[in-house]
Length: 375
Image 1 (tube, rainbow, N blue to C red):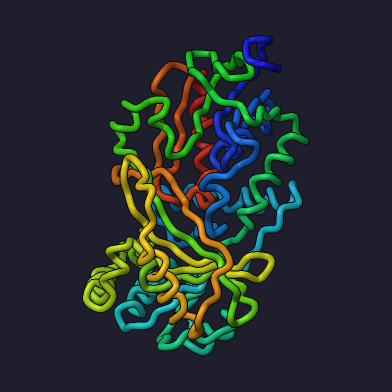
Image 2: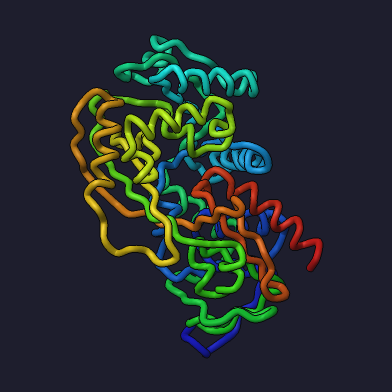
C-alpha cells in the first residue's frame, strides 16, 4: 500500500522491530490485541543484532533484576514456542586480583545459590580454557545466551504466525493521539508504543532531554576461538564496574582503583572486557563505550586494540579478527529505562543501559500492563 492510498487499524501500533518493540508486540498479541509493527528497515539491524546475545540476569540489581528475572522466563518460553535456541550455560566471572576475588565473595554472600563460587581449576574446566593469572571465579548459572544475529528475525516470524502484521521498510512521519502517519499510509491505533532505542529525540526531543538521553557508541569484534568451545559467557574484572549487582559490592571501589592504576586505558575507553561464543564457534569480544547526543563518525584504533589486548591476555593467545562493528544504544545516567507518555495514547519505551536483551521482555510486560489499564 503506497503512501496515502489507504488506512490500517490496530489495537496497538509498535514503532520499531528491535527487541523492545518485539517484546511489546509479543505480550500484546498474547493478550488478544490486534498488533501492527512499523519498522523503517527491511529487518532488525540495530542494537538488537549488534550485541553479545548475553541475557545477563544475575549481575543486575534492584528493579532491573526483577525485570531481568521476568525476561529470563520469557526467553525460555520463546525458546519453546518459537523454536529459538536458548543456551543455559550461565556466565563465569573471572577474578585475577585479590580485590576482584573479594567482590565475588561478597556477591556470593549476598545472592546465595544464584552465585556459585569456583576455584581456578573448576573455572578452567567450565570455561574450556585456563585464564592466565586467575585466582578465583564465580558461576552465574541462571544467565542465558541466544544468537542475536538470528533471534530478532525468529521472534518476528513467530509473531507473524500469531497474527501480528509487520510493515517493513516503512518510515513514521508523525505521531498523533490514535494515529501513526507512515510512508505507507495512516495507521489508526488505540495505543502506540514507540520503541526506537536511541532515536527517541527524532520524535520527542523534549522527552529525550528531560531524561538525559544520549547515544552510547561501542566497538565489538568477532574472532576465531583459540581454545575451541567456550560454553558460558565470560566476564572479567572490568565487568565488575558495569553491572550493578557487582559494582555495588564494597570491594568494587578497590577494583576500580586497581584498574585506574594498572590499566587506565580500560577506563578511558569505558571498556567491559567480556566474550560470548557464536553458534559457528567464533567469539564475540568487546566492548568499549563512548557517549554523546550525536555519534562521532570516526573510530580510534585504540578502542579495538584495548579489547584485543585485554581479551588476548584473558585467553592466553593472539587473536584473529574476522569482523568488527559499531554498536549504538540509548543511554541515560538518570535511569535504566525511559518510559513516558509525551502525548495521549503514545508510550515511549527505551532501555537506557545497554541491557535490552536482558530486560526488554520484562519491561514490555510492565509497560503494557500499565498502559492497558489506562486505555
